[in-house]
Image 1 (tube, rainbow, N blue to C red):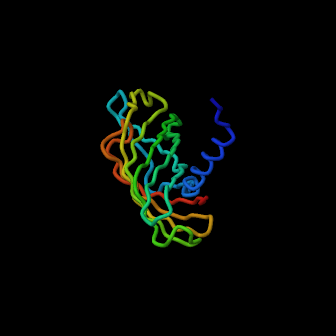
Image 2 (cartoon, rainbow, N blue to C red):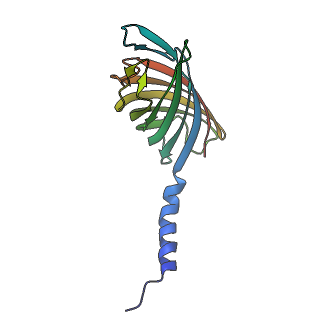
Image 3 (cartoon, rainbow, N blue to C red):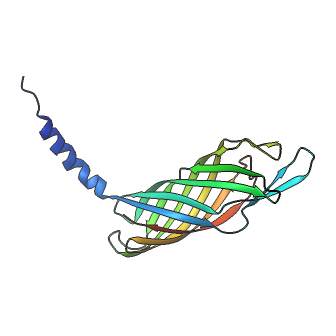
Amino acid sequence: MPKFPSFILLVVLVGFTAPALAQLQVNPYVGLATGNQSVALATPTDGLENYAGDRLLIGVDVLAGAGQWVPLAGLVYRPTTYESDAGEVFNYGHIYLPLGIAYRLLAADFDINVLLHGALAPGISFGDGMASGSSIDHGLNWLGRGGVTLYLGTVTLGGQYVHSFGEDGLIGSRGGTFVLTLGGRF
């Protein structure tokens, strides 16, 4: 029985996957959270210690398809170093996986476009386990995200409203944060 040449298999696979890969749009970005990024932790002496936190985050969204309505998946990383007035520092980070839908106002091939998007984002928290003598819980938490992104060629400018559902051990029910983003489109 003749063997199927691997070169032919490679050509067939590339032929079928190339159109699918051409439909992926990758949007990496850097974000700046606005508003109050501080937290208050209870101390063992029943007082509160205030900590100021970082505002930066990085992320990437991937859109799959050339239509106006497209699925969206992404990854967001927010490393945060919190520091108290007394100089005590602890690190606390988040990784989120936004999964949602996006709508392009114009066809996908326009250089100038507006993208409306919404997503639910399960995430995990990690970092130092103690601060001010208080134990910090880590685990699964959820965000909701909605926003608008302006495409200017390969540059993107956007805004996202991010709302925390429930409590994540450190922040509690903090509510929402507005994030300004600057990124690219490939």
